[in-house]
Image (tube, rainbow, N blue to C red; front, side, top):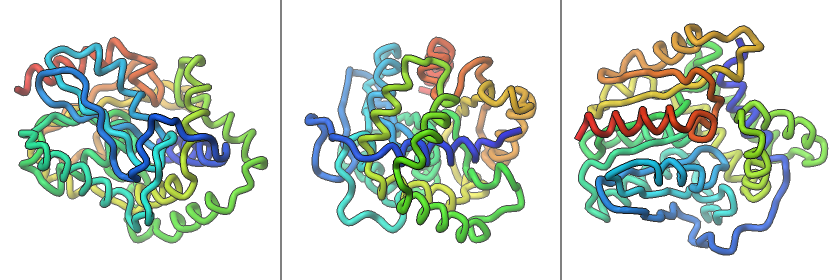
Length: 298
């Protein structure tokens, strides 16, 4: 089966090498996490993934009831200004910024939903401050991506390879990767009309930010750290895009169960048909799962 690590790598390479583009005028230039608040009700932080815009969550936000969405835009992605200077450890820096936002705005145990890299960031926040967050929803993400291909891998053992990947991403010739980028994007969603949006976000993302985020993601191993999380956690996984490579729902579920074995209060659900962007590919299923989970953990 083609591992989810391969999907992560393809996403990073594909969306980085498409080249620089114009940032959207409405995007703040602060180089920090930007938050748009939508609606009233229970606070729900919504964190996008690598190179994604906060807009990836808007339709989900509008479909949920009794929530106040806090749509987070991570710096350097999809036209947002990169941090200056770039952090040595992207995940830790974003973790601290988002937790500071929670405290500064006096959000009492807000719920959090994170996709892909945003899911790992959600876990990192809950590990760092177990009492600061309420229910967690992790969308197609695991505590240690490098461990999916080799469960014996450690953060230290993959550090050199991750460093080589980061260097290659920074040195890449955009033209030489364009065909690979387009091919790599297609499996990420089963909604073809969304591909131009993904391509635009990739063009508008800062290459150094993406490379740094990829490196940080690969060298963080939270598999044992999640044992300290006190929030109920729902994991929503995808597998259908790898069916052609021998994946089954059962084999994908086993990977998720192995990765989350140390998390005490976790429920894992698998989409029957969605690809990586489950909020687009299987929206009714995802929305129903999220709404029911939030309603049952007030």
